[in-house]
Image (cartoon, rainbow, N blue to C red; front, top):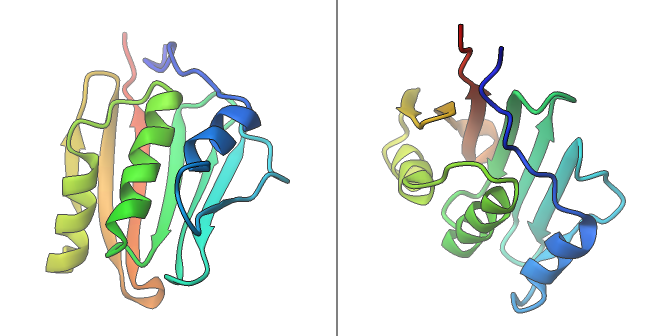
Length: 134
C-alpha cells in the first residue's frame, strides 16, 4: 500500500488564487491539476512544470531558473495545497541549484524527495515519491 492517501487535488481556481497577488506569474489553466500544473514567469525566464501519476504516488517537478526564489515560494505553497510535506523544500531546491549538486534526498513522513541539478534547463529536477507501507 502506498503512503500517499492524504493527497488533496486543488481545483484550478485555488491555484489561480495563489497567483493573484504575484506579479508576472502565470498559471497554465489549460492543464488538469489532477495530473499536471505549470506556473511560469516570462520576464524572469522561470518555470515550474509538475506532472503526477494518476494515483498521486509520484510528483515529477521540473524547475527552470531555480534562482527565482519567488517561484520556489509559489511552488511550496502550491504543493501544500496538494497536502504534500514541504518543510525544507525551498532551501533544498536552492541549495541543490547553487551548489550544482548531482543528487540528494530528503525524507518526509509520507514521501521521499530527490533533488537533481540540471544544467540544460538551468534548474532543478524534484521527484516526490510515496513511501510504500507493508
